[in-house]
Amino acid sequence: MALTLPTLNAQASTLASTAEQRRILSQDAPCRSFEEALESAKLFPLCATGIRVFQINIGKLCNQTCRHCHVDAGPDRREAMTRETAEECLRALASTNIPIVDITGGVPELNPNFRWLVERARTLGRHVIDRCNLSVLLLPSQTDLAEFLARHLVEIVASLPYYRAPQTDAQRGEGVFEKSIQALKRLNRLGYGVEGSGLVLNLVHNPVGAFLPPKQAAIEAQFRRELLQRHGIVFTRLYTITNMPISRFLKFLLESGNFEGYMTRLANAFNPAAAVGLMCRDTISIGWDGTVYDCDFNQMLELPVEEDAPRHVRDFDPAQLNQRRIVIGNHCYGCTAGAGSSCGGTIA
Image (tube, rainbow, N blue to C red):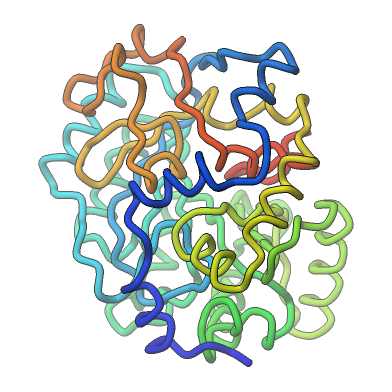
C-alpha cells in the first residue's frame, strides 16, 4: 500500500541522529569493515584522482517526502544555500577547469538561487546537471521551469523508481507517478530525451525494497519499452542506483528487520572493480552551508573531507583536494556492491 506524505513526514521526524547512524553502521553492521574490504583488494587507502564533477547540494526542502531518501528531504526542511555560499561555489568553480556542475537537493529548483546558479555556471562554460524529482515541474510557481532548463541545455536526471504507479507511489507518495508522467511528457514536448535534440533526459531507478538493483541494461530496456507503449515517453538513458543504508532507508531496514540481511548482501557483493571507479574519487560535494564532502552520502552522515583538506568552499584549493584521501565507512558498501552504484548509474 502506498504511504501518504503525512505518514512519511511522521517517520522522518523519528530518524536516528547522524551520529547514531554512524554508530550503527560501524558497530552493528554484521560484516567486515569497508576498510578491511579495501585492504583485501589492495585499494586502501582510497584516494581521489582529481575532480571532474562539482556537486552542489543547495538544500533539503522538497515538495515530496520519499521513503528511501538519503537526504531526509521534505516540505518541512528549511536548510537552504544562501546567495553568499552560492557565490563562493561559483568563485571556487571559476578557479578550476572542472567540466561538470551537478546541482541536487532536496528539490534544488525551489532554492531561490537555483536559476542564478545555473546561468552563472553555464556562463563559465560548464555542463550543468539538474537532479529533478519531476513533480516540481508541475508546481504553479514553476510553470516556466522546463523551458528554462531547455534554454540553458541543462541535463536532467530524474528519479522514477518504476514504470508502474503502485511501486512508484509506494516509495515516493500517493499520486507521484501520475505527476511524473505528466512532467515527462512536458519535457518530451520540449525535445528532452529525443534523439538529436541535444537535451539529455536520464531516468533513475532504485529498488522499492531491501534489494540490489537489477542489471542496468536489462531494466533500461524494460523502462524504454513500457514507457513508450503505455505513455509515449522517450528518454536518453536509465541509471540504476542502490539504496544507501542511511537516513530513512536505514530506519526502514532497522524497523523491518532487514538491516543485517541487507548489509550482509551488500558486503558479500563487494566488487573491487566498482571500488576502483567510485564516484567520490573524481567528485567533490558541497553542502548547503558550504561544507566540503567526498560525496553526497558522506554529506548526509556529516563526514566532511579529511582534516588536511579544505573543509569549506570558501577555502577551496584544487591542489589539496585533487589527491585527498577519501573518508569511508560501511555505508560505502552500497556503492561497491555488484556492478556498483553512483550518481551516474552502475560503475563496473
